[in-house]
Image (cartoon, rainbow, N blue to C red):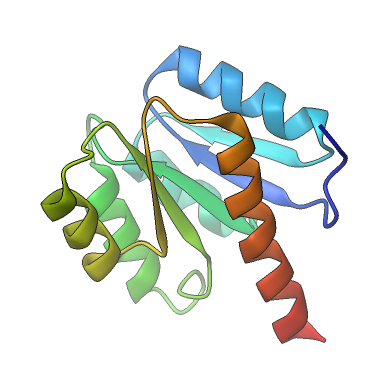
Length: 133
């Protein structure tokens, strides 16, 4: 795997410790800084305090699910600009359409392919960098 073209801060939101471990190691390996949240409520707090460049959001979590957390991120002026990539085992077309229509910019089904995750992250980071220039 090559190093990230645009090292960034990525907020990973997932209640599964295995997914957090895999994603953190994958993203750290290519040079990104990782911040972890285990539920949607924690994700909202960290999105403000850590100023991530992108969010990887699980949809099924306790306390506040990913759909609600993503909607709230979209509604807040401080976080509405953040690209949000949903990660979910809900791979049915209706679930993907609901997610993309309601709250997220992209959908990746679980189990995920690490190369696919990195490619989608880099695409969004490149777009964000282009908008800032």
